[in-house]
Length: 378
Ligand SMILES: Cc1ncc(COP(=O)(O)O)c(C=O)c1O
Image 1 (cartoon, helix red, strand yellow):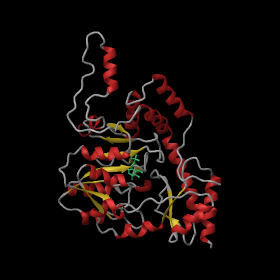
Image 2 (cartoon, rainbow, N blue to C red; image 1 turned 45 degrees about the horizontal axis):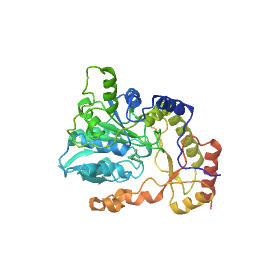
Image 3 (tube, protein in one colour; image 1 turned 90 degrees about the vertical axis):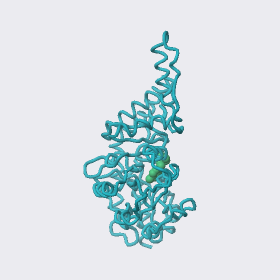
Image 4 (cartoon, helix red, strand yellow; image 1 turned 60 degrees about the vertical axis):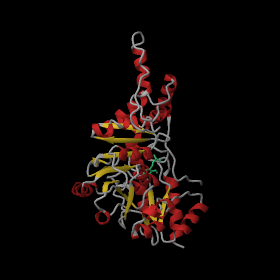
């Protein structure tokens, strides 16, 4: 056996959509991006969505939307992917690392209150692995402290908390469609919100500051060919980035979006099988409490004191594993911003992510469970 940790689930629907884009021969930011943005908005329940080329870009621009003065602080969880905190640095802001809860690996809201000071302007809750941050509680705290809330939904496309889609609880939601995520566009991301005025300017920021998309100008040129010589005109009044999504990515994204709920359901079935399989094990427990039927979980993970030995045991059986994630303040870049996060610093050493992608067969999941059992019984 050779079992991959992550694998995108792709099929004929993606190819059919790509064919349309090829036939139109417009591969850059164009009408397919607009269609994907509109369908995403309808799916998630947002008034506006903006397609970008990654969640890293989405997080960067979400903070840019507020034009916070340099040197202000943004609260981020201690355990997350680099981009949650690099987005803060890109905006000349300071990350403040908040510890995680021992059982859920979710931002500890008590520690958030402890770490808060008057320079804090925003918080980026991360639904780590798809486990939802208790957004009802966080929104009350954020309101009290005057914090803007940018949800990092890189791991939970389609997930809900208390009946409301993740990404729609905070002021802005940022999603990742990188190849390993709940759904993919190869690389890609989405920024969404109900605040049109806040997000509309980001269209220029994602397109090197240019106020009109090229394809709209091309369309305009075709429609007013005889009397309009200025179809090419545009204005650059902000320092933007080359962060736009393109039609190739959006074509894949539209097909993936149509399958998102069923892919999430399949992942949940795999997780339930794992949960049954590890029941009663002495040395291996689930990484956090999977409340199946609630969120959209990106991966199945476990905790084991002998983490590195278990990784090698699985590797020798052809089973790929990962660790999500290092506490960021352990990384050299973030050391200057290190704060006390004793829970994050201790629990991460037990984390192992197991294969849980949608195309895994039951036989493959059972093979991984058998390998875990063998290790547990040693
Ligand atoms: C929590 C989190 N936020 C942001 C990102 C960045 O996503 P992208 O690869 O789309 O930039 C990731 C990527 O893994 C992530 O795990």
